Image (cartoon, rainbow, N blue to C red):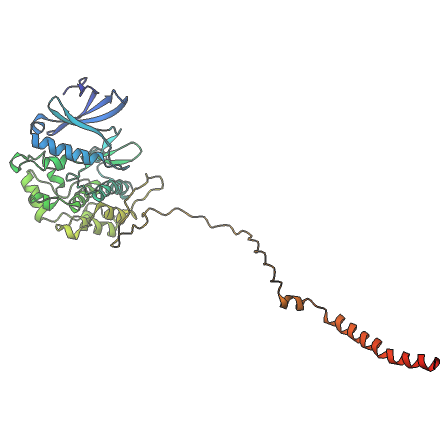
Length: 360
């Protein structure tokens, strides 16, 4: 495909953004929705197989169902002019590999927030049952506001369905970021993506991948059996806890690593958090009982609450029963009244006698 061509009668190819052994990437305009998109067009070598076309559609459809702030959104996919293509949101900026080449290496404060965002996007995909299979800095796009988005979901899995003899160094993932199980030809798992994140993190902080070799076979051997140079030799000031995390992530056995990218992201939250960093949408962990726990995010700064006067609740009136009636009687007055009555009553016989004495 060339610049200026109209793909599928809808997408006007404006500019070639990149080209590789697998596909070409174009910036294009969607003439139906009038928006700028990015289109990856696979080469004819990979578009001509009907079996691969079916796997590609299945994986692209699964990738299109992922909706996360740290995943590049898939808008459309199809086959046009005997070429498979996938339409994605256009992310202004550069991929992480370009940034590493420009800066040499990132500080812990600048690099770890980017890795956490990658963990958030990949962890969301792991929860959806998808494994990326080709995690590398080339597939991590960073916008000018430091928002990282993972791209190329589904393509690597579709390519993994090809016969082993048809795979090339370019097609079957990237040997620099292979997990040991991928290097041995085994099926990848979420722990495989975690290993690849560890390789990216090692390179991001030190400026060099943990393993380098002149051939893919030698790289595979190093991933399977060799230990990387301790990252402290490149960064003497690295926190000990962070060094231990990187060592754990680069374990040869998948069971010795973190199970999902979300778990790794949660562990990394304590390192390099910046006040103005983008929000980190990590997927909540599901415990054994199936009840989701609250999402782990950096707690907000709470100001002490100001004391306020709370008026007492009004006391309800007493029950107007018999006890309350007797409680309200003035017994002193009652006693004086009875005494007066007795005194008056005692004078009646006296005055009767006086009356009959004067009137016999």
